[in-house]
Length: 239
Image 1 (tube, rainbow, N blue to C red):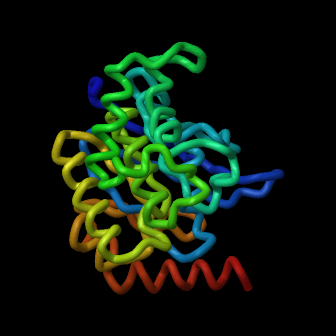
Image 2 (tube, rainbow, N blue to C red; image 1 turned 180 degrees about the horizontal axis):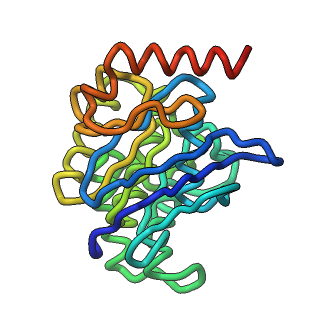
C-alpha cells in the first residue's frame, strides 16, 4: 500500500447536462478515515463518488487528491452498473485490479495470478475462479468485486452500495473484510442505506440531500434534527 492520500472538496458541484445533482460540497476525507455517505434516494451520493473518481468533472469548485492522485483510488461501483453479459471469467475480473501495476497488454506474472487467487480465497470464491461472471449470484458478484479491490491494493477505497441485494451472511463477511482493510490504515468511503450498520461500524458520516446536511461524527451527523432536515430538503427539491 502506498503513502496516505487525502481528498479535499472545495465548493464542488456535480451533475449532468447543465443540471447540478449535488451542490457546493466542501470538506475533507482524511487519510485513514472510515466514512459512510448517506441520504435519501437522489440525494447525490453516487454522484459524489463519481465526482471524486473523475467520472464527473466538477461543474463548479474543485476536487483535490493528494499524492499520486486517482491512481491511488479503488472504486467498487454499484453492481447494477456493470455489464455482466461480457464473456469474462471471475479470475479475469479479479485480475483487472492489477492493471495499474501490470498494464493492459503485458502478460500477468505468476506472482500476480497468485495474488488474485489469494484474494478469491479471502472472499470465499477460489472455487469459482474459472466460472463466467454471468453465472454468479448477486452476493457472489460482490465477493468477486471485493477480491478485485484487494488485488488493486489501493490506500483509498470508494464503495457505492456494496451490500445492496446481497444476503445477510455475505454482507456480514464483506463488512468484516472492509473493517479489516480499514484497520490496515486504508481510507474507506462507502455509500450506504442501512443507518444501523453505519452507526455500528463507521465513525464518520456525510449526510447528503442535494448538498451537505451534516458531515462529521456519526452520532452527531445522524441526529433527529439532521435526518429531518435531509427529508425536508429532499421533499422540497422533488415537489
